[in-house]
Image 1 (cartoon, one colour):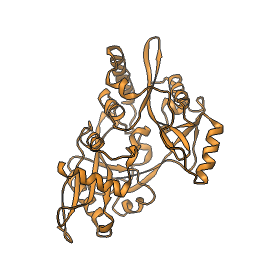
Image 2 (spheres, rainbow, N blue to C red):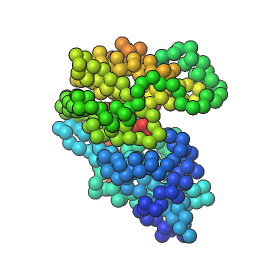
Image 3 (cartoon, rainbow, N blue to C red):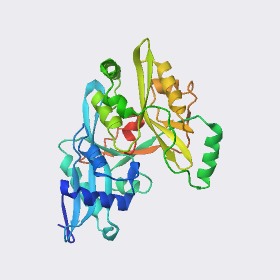
Image 4 (tube, rainbow, N blue to C red):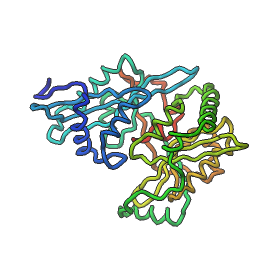
Length: 348
């Protein structure tokens, strides 16, 4: 209890009220509409586990605050798993702001996960970052974004419109790549076998890299890029000699007046820079003005970036902030300890 408020665990019956509160506070989210189907996919069907959540309830049973932690799992040196959570989907009703609801929900959830997670990470924006820093998070740095411009004239025109704050066209941009959902849902025995082998080969090579990374399994990819309701993920592949040697996932989206292909995931055989370059070029040529991705240092994609016409975009990227459930992040931990894909950090 606190100031006429009750704090308790999120229950299934709370979901409609939570969706209404999130919509009122944060608009429609990445799909433009907050649905129970999307909520269940994100928080109940996640292969890393169901999301712990808390709500603040006012007199009369009205949900006026919500906080959820999305579960995640990194793998580091020697194959050690690092269980983590990511604060997401947080809202307080305007009538109840300034009463410490955000802090109370956060601290209670941190206490709840302290025995099962060792890392808490997220990518707060400029408005929310100070609040996180005040609660023990540490800013680790900015994860940069790399662009590959496909339509220079259209890109320049859209960039000028964006600077002038002119609205862009409505509706999703055109994209020529096939849908990831169908490719992942029924890949066929040959493709399924080759995808599993590609992912296994990739993971064997990555075991020597001490940086934290998300393990890509067929089940993870099917959830993350195939089953997401309302997120139009597409797939690009590279074959050589009848064998699958590279796969990438991304989605077309509007960035104001610009049409962007957000390249979330790129997986190739160890050392195969040619396949990485081809996937980068394919993403850029998918029909949008440009492709955007993160190229982690030391990866095949980063090595192939110049060959594929990629440039680092200034003043872009996401700020990574982190702590442990029990306190500050160890001083030696830095941004260099991760090998991200954009899909690891993309807000969804």
